[in-house]
Length: 449
Image (cartoon, rainbow, N blue to C red; front, side, top):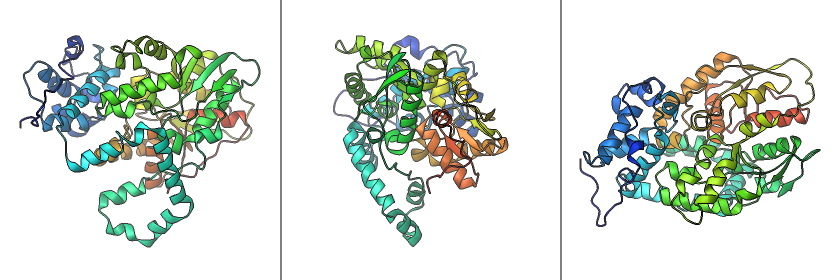
């Protein structure tokens, strides 16, 4: 199959990469058992090794990019488990993003439907936080006025295609207040001030889990931080970089640096595993930009995941808990564990909370199927992974599942609800914030219907 015709020359992202990155793979196969898509299909092309072979063939001019190549790049979860397993230190994250950028620049998957959806979401909605907030307010009104319940109860959704019914059922509950309504621009430290930090509020996180942002600010303040939380923060660009829109990701990175100048803070804090993995690589994204390259390098040094920052700083002990301990298990966000290598710190934070009995989740680092928007674009594979994850959650007997990424939170909430598993799903920082407030851990939270 030949590549899509183009009237103008296309700059190849893979051919433009430092060749040492492209040729790192030793083809040893250590990554194969860690790859969810290879595990499910046992097909070489669905493995990191197979995908890298395709990328290298294109970089070497031995293969033209085709729709088959494009489909393979988007079948990959981008979970980065292969990077943890790789003995050669292959930077699969960089290869993966440039491969998807190659797909988009060559328009290998272009169709009217796809062009409209990407144009509305990636190129318009998530490029301006005010637009996203406006859509969020409309969704909130739709839910609070009971229109959603009416639509679901009427049976009208049965008239729509199966996939639309599934998507509607996954619609998250929008928070009654967004981050800028819950959090002051500057929150003073409780007690002696040790640090000045900024907190990133995110996109979907702001609409669906603004309470997690509030909890993050409260926990930081309790631990001696003066916390700055500017309103109307832009998207970090992870959605764009992970989906081949390199130029848009660069544009958003510049905006983020302008809104949160890294030279003003001791640390810039993220509480979203997926976003954090991207946010720590602004220098690579902007290395050719004379106006931003130096500031981006400083940004990368200041950017810290909330667990990564709190644990070395020393967590202030919450008051003792009363009553029996609550069994909690921890699902690792792929980009937090494999992308950022933040593995022990969330467990240390959870173990610092009185009243919690932490039990290990089997295959804690195995992807839940959320993977950004993977559960929307590849529902069958995402569903298989979610079923596997929920089965392991059930086996722990835990009453609470902790996880540190909004996509994982939403995916696990929906999966447990569908499977009838009565657990609460919460961010570790929320559990710590509740302990500071001397709230008893809740067994089961209200979950989106």
